[in-house]
Amino acid sequence: MKYPLIALSAALLSLSAHAQVTVDKAWVRATVPAQKSSGAFMTVTSASDAKLVGVSSPVAGMAELHQMEMQNGTMRMHHVDAVELPAGKAVDLSAGYHVMLMDLKRQLKDGETVPVTLVVEGKGKNRENVTVQVPVKPITTTR
Image 1 (cartoon, rainbow, N blue to C red):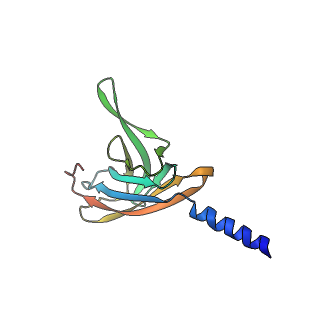
Image 2 (cartoon, helix red, strand yellow):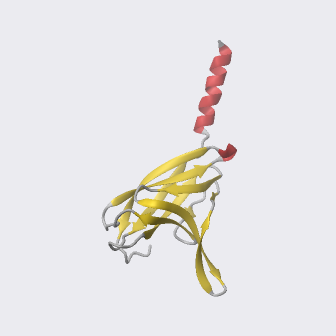
Image 3 (cartoon, rainbow, N blue to C red):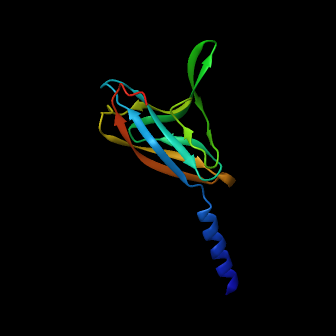
């Protein structure tokens, strides 16, 4: 009888050890009617070492993690497979990294909210989906 209790306790401890992720200051830039892409920006903090390995939203046909870098005097943007989330450190996805929402299915209007799901990979390759309701801000918003 004591072994099933130990197994249950171990299982509960492993669940509570799963990466806890918080998202702050999230926003998406509004679009004009024919626009097919927009950026989503936020600060992501994980309680334990983890990686942001994916993103999706029902308003976009495709969503990716992107990085902005200066190359030969020109700012370039490119897809990245993952963004490191060091334990307890806020990672700003509005400076260097950001989320690109592409092949938009509709216009994103100032004042509405859109769901964005982040895929976070913790130790042992365990994955957790974190869905946040992200407010859409005016096209002219910069931060």
